[in-house]
Length: 171
Image (cartoon, rainbow, N blue to C red):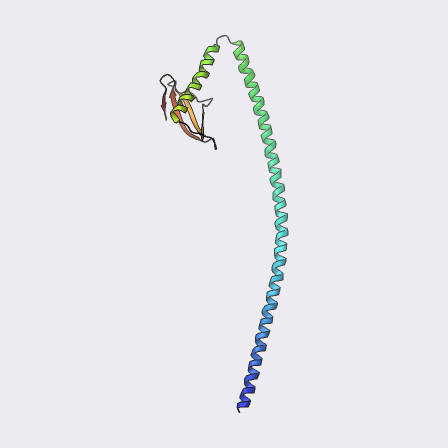
């Protein structure tokens, strides 16, 4: 009877081992199939990404070329407008007897004085620069308006009203 039990146990163990081997082989085959499919999908996706990237690069290149062309046209137009305006101003200066060169020179010197007053008041700072806007440089009280701008971004940090007679700065 013990011998019979031992044989039965042996058969059961062998069946369990064969089941385990079969299961392991099935998992191995499944793993191999998944690995092959993953590799194929990755290569398909890579090809699609490369094609997509080429299309994006072509579109970006076209857009950049258009932007460059627009900028060149704008610069040409601005240069033309500037030249026309400069020519008109030169003609006006040459033909009008009422404009006094000293008055013009004093206005330029006053602008420079205003900027120097703000520079001295602001202190030593290499991260900013000072400008006077062409269209809005003097207020109703005769004070010059000087902008303090960030050198890296050109963003206006502060505006200062300057009385060049008294040297007073108002931020």
